[in-house]
Length: 170
Image 1 (cartoon, rainbow, N blue to C red):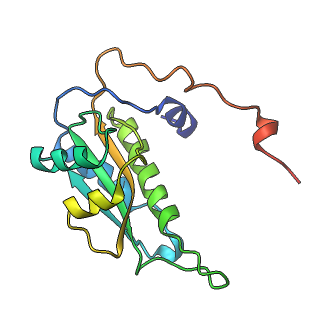
Image 2 (image 1 turned 180 degrees about the vertical axis):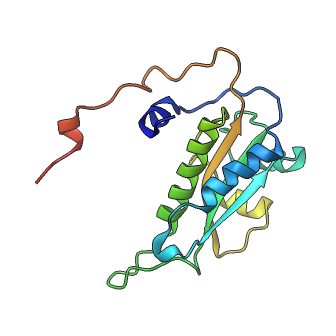
């Protein structure tokens, strides 16, 4: 599939079948994240794979946006490994983790797995439930699974602002 076709096809899925995603597919999704570019190639990310009932129940404690997905990836960054911009100390962590997550959701789509990006979660509860160290910062939850039959993207999925509003060529 051509990239623009894939990017247009990918949509947020919020209703999943109960079917499990195979370990082979999970590995491909993870590998797509692991090859994502990061600042100075520091690779400060950590991906948690949440697929047991016990772990999925913990996810439900920190967000209502779990959509009963059979698997949830938690994409985090390690504050100690991020590149820092020298003049203002801004770190690359959020950006690096976002690039990783984007690679993962696009690979999932290409493999027929639906996903959605969730930023609406209580990070403190997530960190507590999964005993994450202070230096690990969660950025995104990626609930994934096979979309229910007949699932349709939201009505706004293909509504785009005009090119001239979004791009300013100097």
